[in-house]
Length: 205
Ligand SMILES: [Zn+2]
Image 1 (cartoon, rainbow, N blue to C red):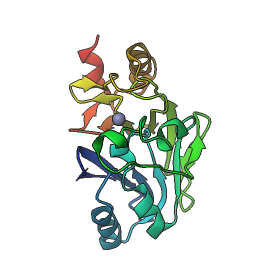
Image 2: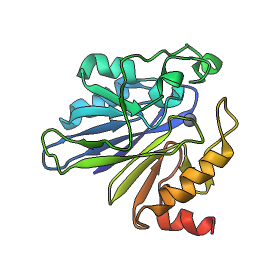
Image 3: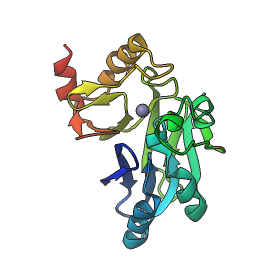
Image 4: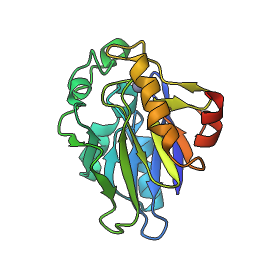
């Protein structure tokens, strides 16, 4: 099951839990702010978070990682090359919005990886590299869900006006990667409402 939690430091952001209903183990995606709110939910529901997954290294998607990792002591996974953002408050934009964030110790993944629950290996997410909004943007997906970060939204696409953004790359990622996924997949973006591949694909054809 997917549980969306809206969190906010300076920008409202979607943090997602992707939880296996049988084992109550799962993944936490983009904990961007409000670590205590996220930790309370985990405790109240008795969930075991095996990994924290990052769709990209912008401050509003990584802001609560350090505080949560301290408590849960779980691994944090992000796409290859992400240290450019994770270790740099200019590129992760935290220097423009408040306290500078430097996030070390993120384990790097690429499209060859499939992220499986240790407790239930069939509960898993594959990885698509979708650069454009950032160089390290990626999508975590399976045949039902896709967590797309800031690459695609309901009614819109990712912003490429930040440092290292690339509009041509973004469209390539959307059209040649995300839109090649099965149309029935539910798309969970980093901000705003969820949508379907089929709906967004129609908008740009
Ligand atoms: Zn972003």
